[in-house]
Image (tube, rainbow, N blue to C red):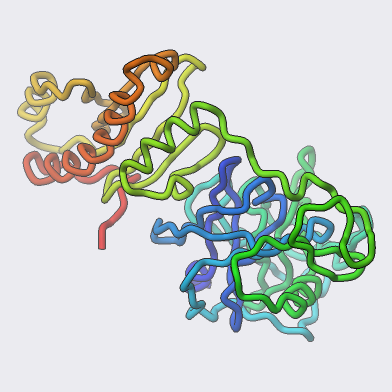
Length: 357
């Protein structure tokens, strides 16, 4: 199971996070439709915290599956295999792989509680393995690393009741999809035809399609403001999104978070380093005396932070461009300061930091 993490990804959208994965022989990243609903371009993060931009190229809402395409991506990790004739039996062990609550990669173990649990118009695999928000779209595997299902849901008011889309349903979707471009395609589950143009009906059989399938998440004025600043950093803002009006990304080794605080303030902050075991007085003297205006250095739970705060109303004033510049420069300064504190005072990097290549 150790190598499986190379094939499992965190899917990051403007609405939140989920999981996705690749299987041997395919370059597409597989996830749930409900994970990427409202987005046609998302970020995909691997276990090393590296992110890439991915285009949503296929959605089948009825099956709750979606495929993502990354330009130039080749799947060289064949640790998850897909087998037509795999037998799924009650009480067999299964492993849920993914990123619950947006946390680092985890594996939970359980058994198959039911192989054909009916819900709605479909049948699912039911398991007692721990399934949490963020696991959706990740692989459900047997002990040999063979795909049993695609984790999709759990009952909110019940313990140990999770569900997976059957591997046979995924095999059909992969076999049907023969395109290699970045176009957004909606599959009609009635006739298996793909529709590119926005429509309330399948262009092949006339089956009704939910028009919301084509609708994209509408960004707030605040989101547009922040993402303009991120573009000035030279990054694709899609790679920084971590939820609604929340951004989290690495600038070099430093983790940067940008969010709204108490509905009144724009806050940008970065956990830089852990406090050292020695030279603490010397470090404190520096922290108290150093002027980093418009930012400030602080300590929280034995970690050094660099932060910036301004009232939300300020982004509608003549100071808007200055605020964007301050956001951009905080990211750059954080990437310098974490190395400074490590080299000068022996401070370990914060646990959130990313090891640079």
